[in-house]
Amino acid sequence: MPEQEYIFEYELIDISFEQGYELPEDDVVWRVSEDIPSHDNEHKEIEYDADGIPMGRSKQEIKIREKIIKDFYAKWIAEHPKKAIMNKWLKNNILVKYQSINETYSKASRTYDSTLAVFQLTEILENAELVDEVIPKNNKNQKQYDKILYMKYKNIKLTVGLQRTNKDYVQYCITVPRQ
Image (cartoon, rainbow, N blue to C red; front, side, top):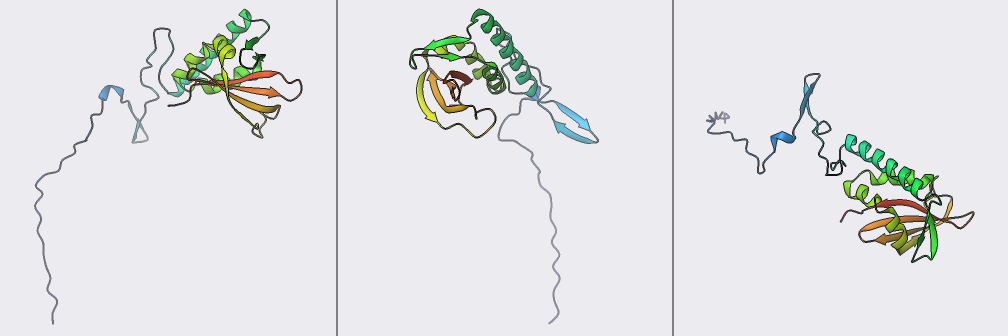
C-alpha cells in the first residue's frame, strides 16, 4: 500500500509577549558588550537614607557601608579607650579588637539593617543576652577561641568569642539576621 503524504497549512493568528508583572523601566540599565546586551543593576542610582547611608545591595553600596562602619569604629574607639563594655548578662567585659572590626565590617556591610545595628555597639555589648554556645569553626579567624557565644539584643545578633589564652570575651561580629 502506498504511503499517503499529508500537508498541513497553518495560519498565524496572534503572537503576544505580555508579562504577568510590571517591570519598572527606571531601574533597568542596559549595556552592550561585544554585541551582547547585558542587564546591569550595579550602575543604577544609589538611594541613601537621611544619614547618607546607602540602602541597596550592590557592590558599590556595600563598599560605601564598609567605610562607614570602619569610620564608626574609629570614632567609637577614640571615645572608649579601654575598648571594652561591661555586659550585664556575662557580668564581664566584652572587648573590641582589630578582628571585631574586620569581621563586623565585612559581614554587617552586606545589608542596610546590619549596618544600622553597628551604630548601637555600646548598647548591644552592654545588654545582649546569651542565646547559644558553640564550638568554634576550624578556621584561622576562630581557632583562637575556646567557644563562640551567640547573643541577642532586640533583633540584633552579637557573636562573641571566648579567647583561649586569656579568657577574654571578644566581640566577633554584629549582624541582623534575615527574618
